Length: 174
Image (cartoon, rainbow, N blue to C red):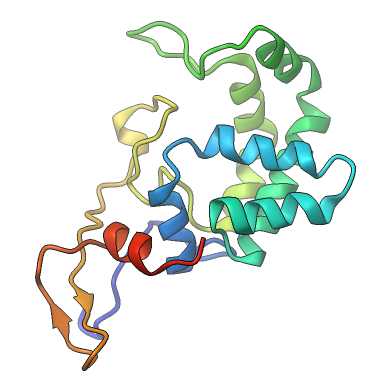
């Protein structure tokens, strides 16, 4: 963009549109499983779930809250298919070439997905990130996340091949 802004996801911005949240998305290869563990912690104490999403995954507080809400909403509205998926250790997707979402993820997509996308802004699909959940290619944005990172010394851009992933991993406290 002419003003130097960099597009990191498609769609409107929201609670998860920060670069810190992008770094968390990039670093955590299976956000579905990682976030599920944090959501489980929130059953007895919501603050523990938020702390887990912030400290273990690296989300900002606002993004952690929308992920927690998403998990709680899915748990309430998709109890049976999610319990079945958990007990039977279902894979995220069925066999190819269809690769249908398992019952829990399909229910979550229908019951929680629209609200999550509206308030989170950033999703893995909108950010062009491949995940452990197979999705149709047309559902994944084409965004290259190999950015030139500012030099810490003088604020200028260096082009040493570093990416936001490498920079985030090297400089983050999560």
